[in-house]
Amino acid sequence: ATSSTTKKERAVQRTENVKDKVASREAALKEKLAKFRDKKKAEATERIDNNLNKVNQKRMEMMLQHLDKMSSMLTRLENIVSRATTDGKDTSQATAAISSARSAVNSAKVTIQTQSQKQYNLTVTSEGKVKDDAKSARDNLRTDLQSAHNLVVTARQAVASAISTTKSTLGGSTNGK
Image 1 (spheres, one colour):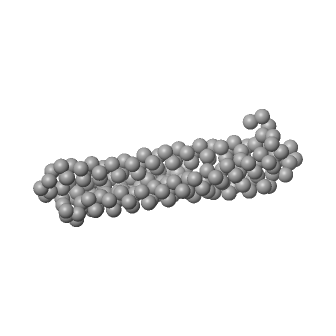
Image 2: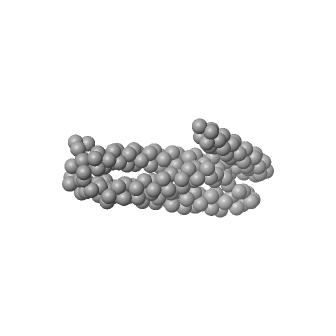
Image 3: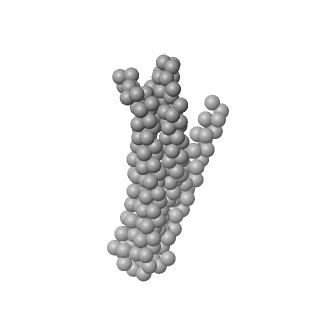
């Protein structure tokens, strides 16, 4: 119970640190935007800054949901394989495939959780270069989202492989499940 408490405390502390950093970055951005002559450009810049972080959070939540579903599928497969093991069947290939898929899912989860902590704030250098700054931040977000998505796809393929290996190992029978 002590380790889980410390993990929770550390997670809360990290969240508070991120919130503090975000608040200070937002204040600095608003200060720079207040100096803009073109108020529409300032409003658009602020909106873009907010939207980049919302997109990141939303995509990471969706990817975590998919990974949780994959993890529950692997748990069900493990149960099926353990029942087959008690029936005396050789399940070493299925067990190895499930283990490989589990590590792919866990690796993707770690990356997704790290990605969800990232902040994509615009670093406005000048009013004339705000479009380039926004494009740069958007491109960074897109690249990071694409790499996270690729990990989820790899995990999904590993789970599909584990399912097919388990099915072939058990002779197509999953004990009615």
